Length: 369
Image (cartoon, rainbow, N blue to C red; front, side, top):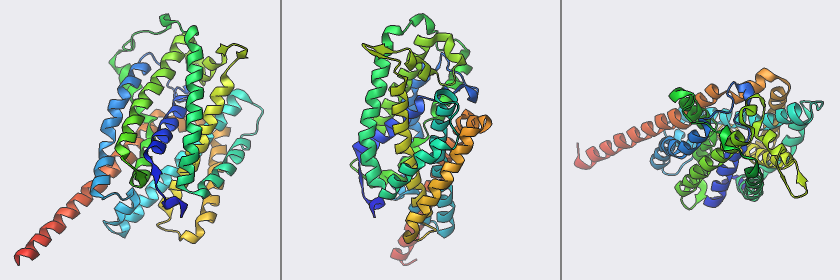
């Protein structure tokens, strides 16, 4: 099966980085009641250290699980544990898939084409996403690496063209709103770094050291979020507080030579990131569900998942309250903590206890006790 083939550490690095950059383009979504803040750029500089701490449960689980994915490692504790973890992570990846599409669709219908049907883009995007998911993990990561390079170049290009329009008088002290403001910014930036859950399924299939790929991602994530937050603040100032998508507004005032209004490049980078993320998340969702569904139903299952994701994305697009929930920092932070800290820690502790118990019994048998 294609989904069982390995991927390169470089491909993992590019995917994680591009996914985080895509989110950074929208993480100051003002309907989530978190406007772009003066402390966000400092929070971005602290992000690599935060990500380094948050990956420790994953690293422990991958070590005691002897390179198994989270679903396969859970089966070592019994069928019940395997079913619980498979179902939980299948739900996570399904939500991440339709949320990625729904966010972009909401951006289009609220900012670029207000008259567009909320169901058009989810249906349009999920067709190629479903096809990519059917091709398997290796194909998705290869295509993602190419799109990631192009998308990252576009984002860097837009940021570079905004430099002449920056006014440092728009940037205040990161402690302008006190330590509480900095804490909220760190929480917000961290809550939008949920792609670390991908490691629990992909890291065991990486050629080379996944730790190096993750370290590169952590550094790149900090640089990317800093670039977007600092540039947006320096260009728009207080005007950014009343924008749904501040970086899109900033890109609209950028120009270089005969090119005016580079917001189209922003949209292009975003849609490429959405395509790669949604395809991978659907494939990982299937891999979790394969614990319950025979492999011969893989195609049918992915088609059904894609259709359901399109419906959920359409609901996000057509409802402002639903769209707000998909960006809600508190909910994202809780989800991040549960799936990337609590569940891996519980499973790793269980596997460690089982290993020690088996070792103790083996020692007793060897001593004739």
